[in-house]
Amino acid sequence: MVDDPAASRHAQRMATVCAYAERIRADLVAGSVGSDAPLRRLIDAAHAGTDTAEPLEALHAVLQTEDALGVDGYAADPGVRGMRWQAQGAHAPGLRPDPGDESVFLCPDDRCARYWLPEPGASVPTCAISGTRMRRDRL
Image 1 (tube, rainbow, N blue to C red):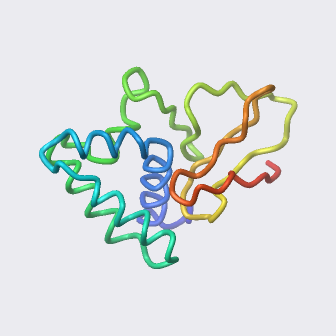
Image 2 (image 1 turned 90 degrees about the vertical axis):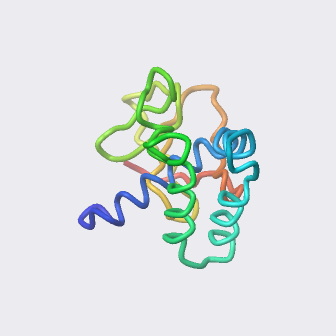
């Protein structure tokens, strides 16, 4: 995925949707769309194991009617949006990685670039799309 810019962008956007699914849902319902159908369509495609490219682009386009950044807007401003982007992908908000820990938690289905670095006492997050706990791997 890293060598393919389109696949990398898709993975980053899926990571953003996963991290901000509930906020996206609320924004869709409260906005001009009035429904979370575009988000549900993406989640349904992911659950079915079908291609998520078209539903993700459709969600992005719908979100752009309210904010020109669309899905990307949820990660664009760390001060407002709360997500910090790093060169390797997005990770959950508010984390302070332990430099001595070689573990990383990744998307359980390899659908997105989201990762989470362990923090003492913190619970491992779940994927907002599949509901599955993120899977442990080594750096």
